[in-house]
Length: 114
Length: 116
Image (tube, rainbow over all chains, first blue to last red; front, side, top):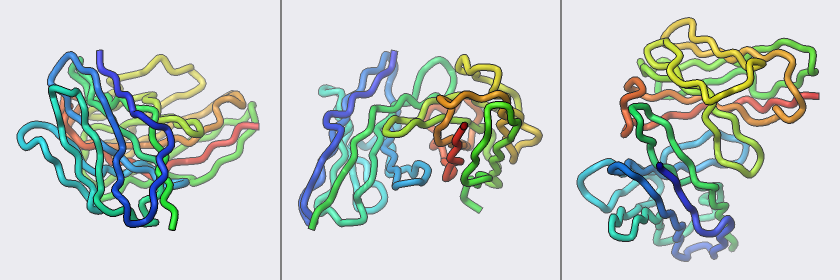
């Protein structure tokens, strides 16, 4: 079965500091992994995804994530936080069984302070 | 057009009311989804339509009734809801049918539902 664990329900960083949001997954099939961002009172927006190929994935707004099979991890990073990055971030793995079900982690709320 | 639209943005209803949520996409996507999201929680899948046919029902109570009249439109009919059904209801679509495990799901902004 697939599952996702996001370490840290709340992360706080200073503007300009490194952002690191942690995601570990469990999957019985080769995983497809996603990071979504949700701003207050909005839907989810895809930041990036890993399917196959290059393990370092670059996304929108300066975010990137590295797929590490040996560590079953897909951590999200951004070199320099901006105030506008404050939001809820969800890591997700695509389910098996022949249908496209996203299994989400619990989410990490990122706060950015001046 | 690269977005999923949802109407209304907000909905308040009593437990005896009947209402409907609407979702529309014009990206030619073949799969459409309904999710329920409670405060401070991740989205929970409710229904999936693939090629206009209901593929997945995640054991959702019958007071929620989905409908896919055509490939661009998805409705969620609500009847006799309970206060605990208050949540943000998100619609999403993806290019392939339900076999596309690597497909990106594109989300709408959601309908904030309050049941009194």
